Amino acid sequence: MDIKFELFNEKEVKIMNDGKEVGRIFSPAGTMRDVTNAIQICGFKDAYDLWGCGVFFDKNSENNRDIQLYFKEDSHTGSNHEISKFELLSDCGRCFMPKKKCKCYDLKIKTKKDIEKDLKEVMLEKLE
Image (cartoon, rainbow, N blue to C red; front, side):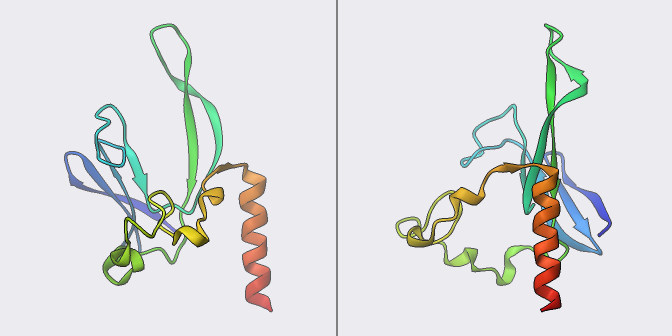
């Protein structure tokens, strides 16, 4: 997968793969887009390796953070996606699954080894 970035407007960037949008970066962030000094990145499969960033620091010389995001090759935007069926009363507002099948436990930052393990499991399933 060869990720490219496409400026959508002054506050949004599309994350593209082979001409298809697989994700988006935008600001302001938050559920209601109410955090004006933040960005939100949508469309990635997993986040891994939250590190200290060696490039950006605050006024007290405290280093900022850096995180890595993994995008799946078969990601796509929601024109035919189930998200249009999202029901605020019956579905989880964080993972968008029915509350009885909530997958919020999957919403965690992983290590690179976790990602590699997940990819191996997917490859083994394809071989079966």
